[in-house]
Image (cartoon, rainbow, N blue to C red; front, top):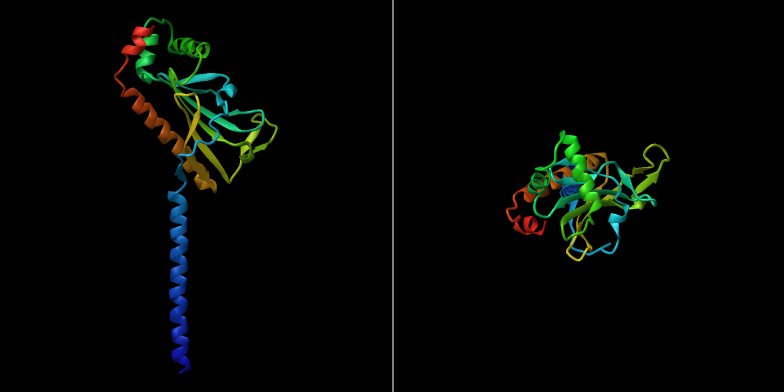
Length: 209
């Protein structure tokens, strides 16, 4: 009788353990799958992110980014992607066709052209990866701030009314997520560059000078 009760208890314990392990694995899977969260809320849409933009660089034809790691005075992290609306490569080819010199000289001339223009949603598609100051730590070295773990990075897009719409958020819970966040950024940037270079309508730009 005692052996029967013990056997039943062991079976119940084994089933409970399996269920608990399955739950933990499912939770871990959900955390991984839900790292990127689509968000349609219009948060922070009145913040003037662009006022913090300083030097810009061009790493791909017609795709402009802030050159170095950029933090606001308060400590928030910003990373901009700026692409002419007519298409990155088309804009680059048209603007550079009459420029002479080495490739770096041509790129520098185009950077100055963009810096002198008013960067708005009328002529540019603009995204910013934003990490709030509450997720950064002041260290006072060459890089004044470090990003904390855990943290959340938000992706915003400048809409036609020059307001910022939140598109996605990425939750970084550990060092593995830190690597995944870089992949998320890189994949998103690659995607919008490909989409930009697939555009065919350049007539408005060419006729407007």
